[in-house]
Length: 258
Image (cartoon, rainbow, N blue to C red; front, side):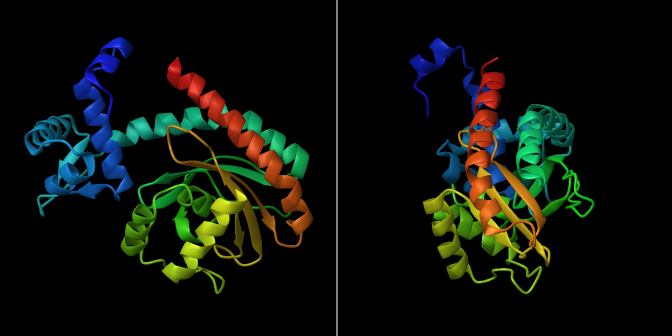
């Protein structure tokens, strides 16, 4: 947490920072939490959380469920749609360069709650290519971009997410054992990239990296038929993806400061 003096120097408003912090905390925990959970996760006093939550409910950014838990509200949808459009615009140069260099479809995706959502894509120019459409939601544990993003998160956060989702099997290659998946994330973190070996769709291979220091949990990937996404192509793709992710991170950081 920032000190009062550093916040004053930056011109920050504490109540606004706390409100957005609570929204992000809820998003990290699947979009629904009780007040006591919020207090534990945010380290804020319960009365403070209650005041902020009631204001967010009144504005439509949160809603109270019959269980008395709070969930992200429908008014956030419009903000999310607008930000996704802007993300697509900022990422297009990097995605286009990846397609020009590698020949396969390039994607930008983000972790939204417990799922991965695709927010931008430049398709391959091959007649046989991936048709993952923008807006599609998939489980994080069976995609390369999901693995790349999850490998940057604390183990407890990942474990809680997998417990909520249940790790459903999409193909015969999907990893559904938490321990095995943990080893996969360790490997991903060590080498700096993730691979989906037909775990979301049979015959499709993807390689992905996380976007570092991004305001959202983002990942870049290329995907295509396993016959074309060979080990040699993966070796060529990883440094290009890493550079594109770094460039996009710098672009987003500049937009955030502006």
